[in-house]
Image (cartoon, rainbow, N blue to C red):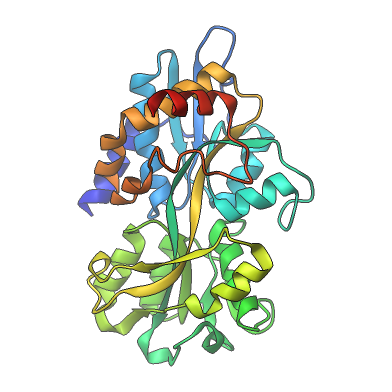
Length: 321
């Protein structure tokens, strides 16, 4: 609770809600303006780090004020970024890859580029212990929260179900809920399982496991990785959710995907360079909000393929190495 309070306080410093009203364009001719950051669900890492990033930009990038906006996450973020509703967007790497290729959720190639690669997202599948679920295939006939509409979580949830031989539209009773609502539904017993893709730790998952104790467990899902990679490529890899993250008895092997921070191609080089530099110059402020930010490293900063790196971002990264 203290962590969430801190996050809200950070966001409040910069909060003029970026919910669709008129705003100053990024990189305006006077050298400043308002920047809006598309994040994710309120109990997820995107929202936490987005609030901290908005605060850092507002205090460190001269002439700019940043606001962090709650969203459904990746796909919605990219759509809003391209539409001009946001200037910066958090996204899962698989959704960003689809965007630049014009595949799956995107009918056409989207003009987005990356400022940097971020930390990895861990696919966290939590199930009610009493529901008799020990694999993704066991979700057949169950009530499953597959994430917010147009979120990266929803994309991964559907792909996991398909990899397990299930039809997401027919074989499960899908509930398209955000993380806070998913956690509440698990607690009340109105869903049997939830899928979440997020950094470690994710506040909502911490709350769920703390509240339900042995009444909930995390599923190992790496048996589906070969099928995921066969269809979607090496964007998906594996890593353990360490036992200490949620005070579990053992590590839980899962599927991970990198995150990227996106902007439009037409962002001015100088601004993109400033924004990228401010991230790495103020890592302490991001890590203080959520430990997942420790995974943001200069070593991996340029590894955004197939999403192109903004020229201004590349200049910043090269200068910081």
